[in-house]
Length: 422
Image (cartoon, rainbow, N blue to C red; front, top):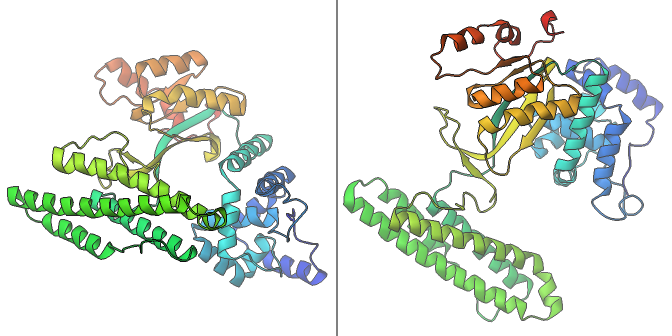
């Protein structure tokens, strides 16, 4: 059963909280005031209620929505893991008071993971929209200025190599088959563990990469051929185990239904890795459609942002735009990476929908520039557009870049103190 808050604290807890309040950091004071908003708590409460049909009225008491929201904010600000969050809140009176836990039990790391999953993307979007409305009501954001940029949020994956992906697939498939064998009390044929041979081949491939020239290439191809052969044998075992599970009585099959579904999913992804490995190693085709980057995060993309220290990033492209006082007014995570040139007009329109007005000044980096974009946003009502064009040789364009609009934007960073923007 879900709750909005813990029960009313005792008189002693109230006096203790007042003493500890003086030790809070400045940001805690501001956030504490904002989180008194009932609509924010309602969003977290409804997200928890959506986990099960009868979460509101049945079951044991869950962690209150107020505590969940505050602990997740503390985790984000400190950039902690769930384990660190649990340990720090349990040991620190200031954090206990900020999270409104008091003398109650701190939820453990596993429960925090599940609660973090319950507050999903839709709830986060609603929370963000409410924060923007509160910023407008307090006149922190007026929407006269806008800055937009894109960044890459990296997924938790290791550097993708074909041999590494094949090794991951072999390990997961073998482990899943072993679990099925254990839960159903044995299979017709015992599952064979080929991970020792797979690991040897992966190490041999790494050693073969040190040898250059045709001899090293031939050695690498030979090791990959053996690794692919081992992976196919494991896939064959996977198919046999899945067929045997399908033929089991319903009660035995239900015991391993989830594991069997995961095994089916992983085996399909491993087949994709085998296809792209054959194409790259034996045919020289590096551009493979629907390339698998990770077996566990299949949505991961390879993104190049032109960074010298990190030419390739593995994750998703995120657009972030802000107004005065660096308040984030809109964000978007893209399924497939678009060109930055296609995002400027949509960013202006998003700010108009969120804040009810077109920004008077807009700034972005050179990736967003095109003459057409500049003309369209000016027609929409943007008076000053500060987007550099690195390839220009026009004196007129250079004078425009040195103009009043660019100076007021201060290199693209919105400044609410500019009187000329009012």
